[in-house]
Amino acid sequence: MIDFRLDDEYEALRKTVHDFAQSEVKPVIGDFYIREEFPYEIVAKMGEMGLFGLPVAEEYGGMGGDYFALCLALEELARVDSSVAVTVEAGVSLGAMPIYRFGTEEQKRRWLPSLCTGEALGAFGLTEPGGGSDAGATKTRATVDGDGAEWVINGSKSFITNSGTDITGVVTVTAVTGTKPDGGKEISAILVPAGTPGFTVAPKYSKVGWNASDTHELAFDDCRVPVENLLGERGRGYAQFLRILDEGRVAIAALSVGLAQGCVDECLQYVGEREAFGNKIGAYQAIQFKIADMEARVHSARLAYYQAAAKMLRGEPFKKEAAIAKLASSNAAMDNARDATQIFGGYGFMNEFPVGRFYRDAKILEVGEGTSEVQRMLIARELGLK
Ligand SMILES: Cc1cc2nc3c(=O)[nH]c(=O)nc-3n(C[C@H](O)[C@H](O)[C@H](O)COP(=O)(O)OP(=O)(O)OC[C@H]3O[C@@H](n4cnc5c(N)ncnc54)[C@H](O)[C@@H]3O)c2cc1C
Image (tube, rainbow, N blue to C red):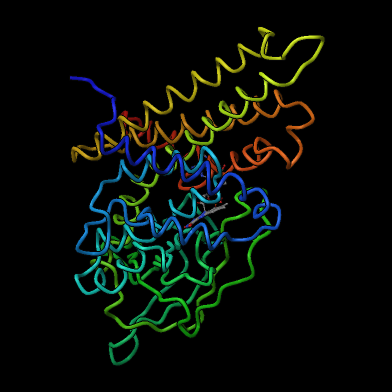
């Protein structure tokens, strides 16, 4: 039976986040964006609402929901602003989920309660200055010191979301920890608490978009953490982040759908107000067709992520569907942002209206958590093309 209706619980969550985004985020976020300032108060409120713990079990301080609940929340947040949405996305899917999925009981009890309430933020350091798509090219190394008590980490990571805020608690870092029997790199994931000596956070980047979110380059210089900070099994780091990225792609797809929907929302209002040549511009078929195309893109992209999430929740393989959802929805976000700014004319280029922000925020959706080319590679591989 096919049914894409949201049940009462999902719909109540969607509506709660929708109302929050419209009343608490929309009126203020544009100024944070222009000032390139991290919105701590909004993050605290989202923490109180439980958004950072949506897919985590209650025994670890979460809401006991599922990953689809997270996606619905991300869609509603991104409908208004993507910086806020990606702060939650990265905090949950890249910060908390690796610990929740692969951590020891002790690691879960130590980190998840504060990550779930938003009192602390987690980050995931995979990308390096030398490359992101080719994760096997990781150069960061971690060796066990002489008496076997500590990992000693050396290397650097680039573009890491949530890694340098006042409330950043922990960064999961991938590092080469040895050589596999086949001669390949053994990659493991290690938890590095914020403030560990030898772990330096560079000043924030100057970015094209996501300007109210937090992104830094990180350096590890003889950074020592206890051997117990290994996340999951040694040598399983590659497999772990592939799983985390598959899930994360569904989350980024939801965020992209939110941005694409936000473009439709803004345009519907504007074309009913703006006049040209004696008519509301919404009366012109060229404008109507543009909005119809935008709506069609959002609709199909949403179905793509709902279906990927449904397979994930059923425990079925969902790699191809996640890649399709991410590819289709980031395309939809880019196309809708371009059309929306065009419909706004000169005002589309002004920070006064959200569509200019949507335009700047859309581009990264084709890059982060796997570029569009990487999504195509994954889809082709799933189709048996080698
Ligand atoms: C704002 C922001 C936040 C981010 N947050 C995080 C984070 O929290 N954690 C994290 O680990 N990373 C993060 N990233 C990094 C992001 O995931 C990478 O930028 C992305 O995976 C691409 O890697 P790259 O930038 O090294 O590009 P590259 O891998 O150098 O790719 C450059 C170009 O070459 C193409 N390409 C590469 N290989 C192939 C191939 N085989 N065939 C065809 N084309 C190819 C790519 O598609 C791309 O177009 C973030 C990035 C940004 C900008």
